[in-house]
Length: 591
Figure 1 (cartoon, one colour):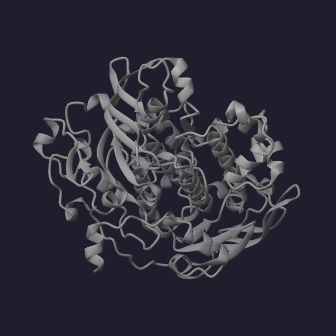
Figure 2 (spheres, one colour; figure 1 turned 30 degrees about the vertical axis):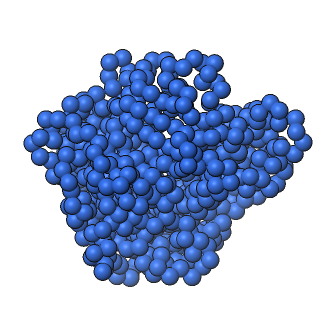
Figure 3 (cartoon, rainbow, N blue to C red; figure 1 turned 45 degrees about the vertical axis):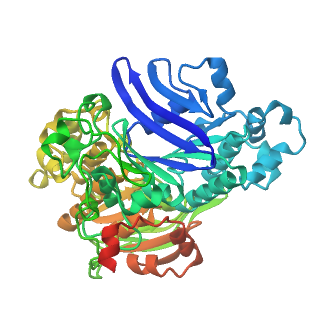
């Protein structure tokens, strides 16, 4: 392999405040390097600095060379010959890359080298490279395509420039597990065929460890650990890396307690003089806050920015790593009964005779790819969509058509079922403080059963002082906790969770999942958990219902379905999940 990208001492600042702090990075031709870490670690800023796409307000120092060509402080004329030609950038949301007013063919044509733009069949060739064999796709617009198809088109447009390095920034975060697996396999096959290097930016450690040759862990704008993927996965040498791996939900078994990293990522400018992770580290020592640890080699190609040699047993996260028995509520009168539910959108049948039940206190997972009908079913139960047939009973109340209920019936329905959405911003008024939002929700409950704002905050593990803050002052995980508290303010018997952790970092996800498990166990609240993440399903549900094209194709106890699925579709879902990293500690425990 030959040296392609070399980054030395790269720093990015806003005025005098550091955002990316003294980062080194090497990528060889044909190599895949994963850049992992929580939101706010500086991963995307580093990538944009490499591509020369930072806004003028940010200052870059250090060195970035592409095959010996210096890019820092390079002229715009030089950078134009690099961007799109030598370096391609693939974004998380293809809508940010694709112009809704241009056809697929137009996107690819404008990215092609000038000499190829008029070549007959070139567009079809480029589409075929990303697995699109239907030539009619070239004449379609982005909004006419599915999410997975849009991402394939975005990849084709980026690859049309024949880049030597592809920077993929969270390219699969918004996709279902099966589509995610297809896209990552596609990138691997294209990379191998072209000999192209890939810089993959992701907070999904499963994906990074599964496909990357090397992994570099970023935190607060700096690199805390780097090494070969297998070495870092099996033997993390920095407490932060170990914490991220320990917070991962696993598909293979249920973890008795999901252990998250407390706190949040600090600003890089606030920790320049010490170990950036010291304030969150469970094994901090006095000198960790007195000096900034440099990256030091601990094994072949493996380096850590921890001052101490940490044994594998110490880096492995605490907590029981064996599955405990799932307590299924005793069968009796169901809390929720959905019978032969049907919902049509024009000529498309979103729900086709769907039948399911949820017992009081039971946690039921609703899984399937996008378009399977999961969210439509949840919306029908919430009264946000009216079915075209069937029946929905909630604690003896017929809620099939909520608009037909009396005023008291509507109040009863709202007190029985609440929802936690994927984006907590949809549940929180930006102009109201947290305390005001919680007090408003709690005001719908009888005074004798009403929880105070302080009690609601304590229920979701937030300090009382958060009552004075507005949503824009909170992190994504804190907003989701407030959204959960608001939903629980009316003491619902059923809580519908619609992808509540899909956009969260792995550590924050562990916080939220453990919170929901605890609340459900202590309060007896039933959960209908909508998700496409089967590892999350394993951790939080007692039973799963598998939807495909609006139909229930399989249902049963969570462990039984995930360990021995019988339907071919369920088997495909399970097979698409990347394996969890196995640490040395787990190897010894299983020996």
